Length: 149
Image (cartoon, rainbow, N blue to C red):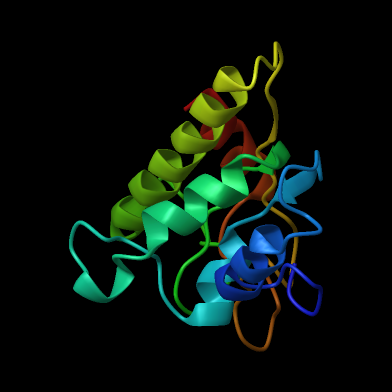
C-alpha cells in the first residue's frame, strides 16, 4: 500500500535487492493496483518503452509474494469502478498478466496453494457520484463477476 515501505516498484526493488534481504523468505502481499496510482500509470513494456524495467522488477517482487489482492488499478486510482467495463479492458488484461507471472513464480517455488482475494473495496475505493455519493457500480456484482473471471 501507499505510505508504506513497499509503496512503489522502485523502493520495493531497492529493498528486495539489498544484501540483507536477498535470499531471505520475506513474504509480501501484492496489491499492485496501488503502484499504478502511485506512479500514475499501468506498467506495460510491450506498448510503452519507458516501462522496459518492469519485467525485472515484477520478477524480483514475485519471488516474495505469498498473497495477492486481485484489484485492478489505473493511472489515477487504485481501483477501476467496474472491471467488466470495456474502457478498462487494457488495465484488466495487464493486471491479469502480472498475476499470472506471480502465480508462475509461486509454482516454481513449490507453493502448493495460491492465495488470491478479488479485493474491490467500497467507497472511497469504489468511485461515487457527486452530491449523492452513490456508488457508480454495485460492489457485490463487481466482486462476483471478477471472481468468476
